[in-house]
Image (cartoon, rainbow, N blue to C red; front, side, top):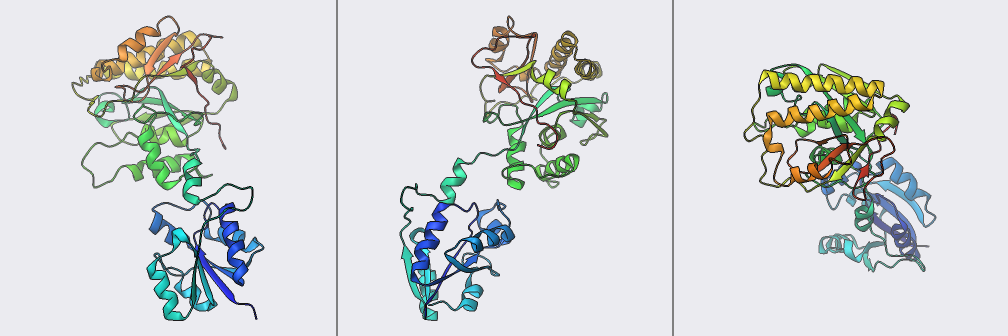
Amino acid sequence: MRKKVFVSGCYDMLHSGHVAFFKEASQYGDLYVGIGSDSTIEELKHRRTVYSEKERLYMVKAIRYVTDAFINSGSGMLDFIDTMDKVRPDIFVVNSDGGSEEKRRLCAERGIQYVELTRVPDAGLQARSTTSLRSEVKSHLPYRIDIAGTWIDQPYVSHYDDGWAITASIEPTVEFMERGGMSTSTRNAAKKIWPYELPDYNEEMLARLLFCFENDPESKGHVSGAQDAIGICMSGITRHHYNDRYWPDRIESCHDEETISWLENHIVLLPMFPRRPDCSVVEGKDITEDKVKALTSAADRCWDAIMRRDLNAFADAFRDSFNAQVAMFPAMIQPGVQEYIDSMRNYALAWKMVGAGGGGYLALVMPDDAELLPDMIPIKIRRRGF
């Protein structure tokens, strides 16, 4: 009679290393597999799974070296005890990096042989582990650029005049720098909920969830503007209207392909330097009704120019929006920024810093058929459904 062999693990991001381990373990007898539940993995690894427990169970059972598999009902590092007691194995097999004295003692108490295997890939394959594989996988979560109206999403600004912020959700064609004005802090918060991509769900609801997740209601500090969550989660070109509140009272999106393509062809990003850790862009702020009205007027004209695909009007409104921002928050122009702006005057029709400024990227409005310089990064606006 063949012996029963038991192994247990998460088997998230199932890879060739797992299959090689199952193959070697099955040489000791009929192989039974315990699989960590979604809740256990979230508890131990502080992240959500890539594949649900049902999907992982299906995939593990489909491997020909596996006799049967189960979702472990326990929790913690020894979540498999109930499964082990149900299977009543003769041998418990672990990888050398997954062994422990606690597991060894558990087997001794139950009269189970304890075997540790060295992680060896099958012939012709490279060694794989979930940790190394995870480090190579890039998140597909979008970034956001703000096009006009930045700062209006803060009530201490929209208190003086209600108005629109305009954002675009852009695909991660490059890994943008941290503290670069691309809403990386909000994107990093989003990765804690959705590690690799946004779910197929109502985009405005996703934005609300992300905004609430990032802003702890018990916190008495700065509230991250809603334009960051909206800009990441809502595809296409979006404008959102603020009136002395943190969340907009209206949201409108443009998904017209000709308009999106037109905007992509006329905006590029130029990397400068990350916003410095000791930089405070709100220091010395000077917010007045006239300055806020200049901001909201520029955003209105910017949206109208985009909808008409009027390049000169768009460039004028784009520049006016940036000038209105700097008039209220002069610390946006940190040392070194002006030099980058001056270097682009002969190439671009208009320019502004993305985000709150202080560093990061310059967004440039380019003429038709402009030849891009080596450091310039074209944008790819995320379409609906992708």
